[in-house]
Amino acid sequence: METKFISKDKIKQFIDNLEGDVFIPQEKEDFFSWQKYPCNFSLRGFRTILPPKFFFYSPQEVLKEKEIVKRTVVGIKACDLKGVLFLKKVFKEGDFVDPFFRDDILIISSDCTELHKNCFCSLLGDNPYPEKGFDLNLSEVKDGFIVEIGSDRGKKLVEENEGLFSSVEPEGLEERKQRRDALRKEIKGEKIDFDGKEVKSEKITDEIKKCVSCTACTIVCPSCFCFLLDEKSDFEKIRFWDSCQYPGYARVAGGANPRKELDKRFIHRVKCKFEYSPERFGSRGCFGCGRCISGCLGGINFKDVLLRLVEK
Image 1 (cartoon, helix red, strand yellow):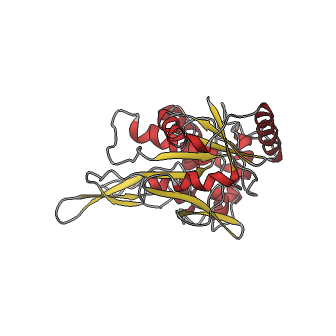
Image 2 (cartoon, helix red, strand yellow):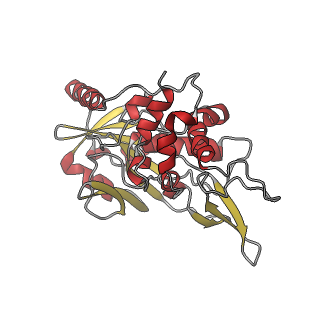
Image 3 (tube, rainbow, N blue to C red):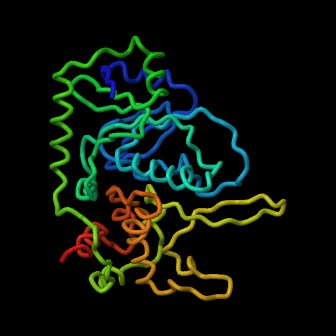
């Protein structure tokens, strides 16, 4: 991919020049959250406390034709970008194309520069830096950022702000490589590989008992997509996020519920991520962001759960 360089003293001017609504991470104590620009912002650190899927797929919405709004999301990290690409497979590339999923948002991603304590992307074979799916990606190096152009929209944006960019020196590319390699090695642990492994609930009985079906794990997951539909009085359809961890999620009209038991719901979520999603969409549905660990009210460490499920 074509690369450019932008200095740190020019990055704000570049963001100022973006059209429409711009959302960007803001550092708050020990976490990052999405804020509407203009605001104090940070392109460093790790993923935000909430995933960017909220920009693409609303928790509650009336299903009607949407007004096109110019919008850019800046600072999406690699795990979340994979989540957005996964959702696009679900909503835009299947037999039915969902007209209500927003895929017109400009994506400017950025490398992680440090890790959250619950991150485990590299244990799944992924990297803490975006590789595809972005319009532009920003990699911090000394005195600035290497800008990788990933789409025609991204190229046009660079051309429109040509005076802010310069060519990349070989030393800059080498520094980026060293930074990326070093951060990847910081994620310690054994590789999590579900290939050919049977998911058995008896391996994690103690962890399953901790689950309170609060559904926090699915709400903060960057790739969970289940929903239900309702109707308003004027026959407009309303879509709500749903969760496979609700006791009544699988209940059918006659009252039967094939996943009434907690252990069945818990294992279903694991299988959805590592078995059903690869079969249906050609991609697993977990990308190691660790938000499910941070959000779990029962104190379940899902990374440890996965490691126990795949151990011999």
